[in-house]
Length: 375
Image (cartoon, rainbow, N blue to C red; front, side, top):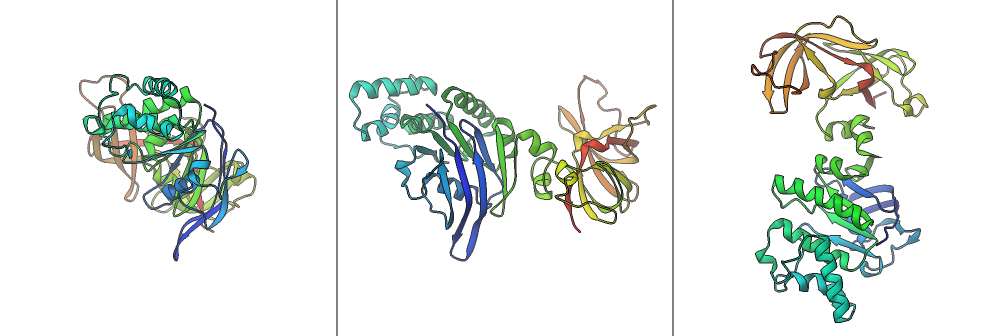
């Protein structure tokens, strides 16, 4: 099977007076595992349905391999969809469910037998051919739905929150299987999810959506490590936010005066340096730092790298999570921050930093980013 490019050109969608998509422009590369990520109601499923042909855009167009398919019905797009409820035929066996689209095409009996067996091997469902959907687990139903979708040899497979009905452990297992299956078949996967960890785990690239707009498109690393705006920074993982006034700009380093905290060193993104966002003295900005980038210690280290932010603090709360501890610390005048400490080595006594202990937190300016310019 061969994947296709998918291009969304200024796609907007209105339902009555409600606009659910606002000038969405995304280019999805051939063979990518691409995720549409965002909270409920952000428009991601509507966008998927427009790609599939189940909805028409109010404005804009959908191109597959450079051809505008907006006028085409779903069965003329070489696109197949996996729905949340799998949409299997309950009265048909596993074999018959997978064979159904092949029978619609009036393919020969031998060809159907060989193709179904190949797809059941691919999805690890051989041995279940005579079972009906009611006899299958959630993960097995998922595999049958994928096998049936692949029977049409689509160039694009659309997956609408396909793991939402599964429990957490099975979801993780199926994610690994989906990723491996994508590598085997080589077609373009477009995956809709509200789960940040799912998207970060399997995607080549991610589009973050909020209120019908695309906030950022990038690799999981880019989305997590250098969010383009305030929404992306807060929606993806946990973070600490700082709002204040710029008091100094030195190259790509910015000093921000934070109320109840004091001067804070952060980094400007390349787009800021290129002048797309003017950051000068007296500009109001919001910056972010991920909790795992913050070091917490009982004593100030003998040496610290240049451009390090260092603050004394007091531990307000410690939450033990097995692989890490989460520290909620009070800095200066009631400024509360989160710091995560990984448990790299076994310690019979647990963490050496406990509730109400005085401590220090520090991090490098390169790990903090400006995510919003307010004026």
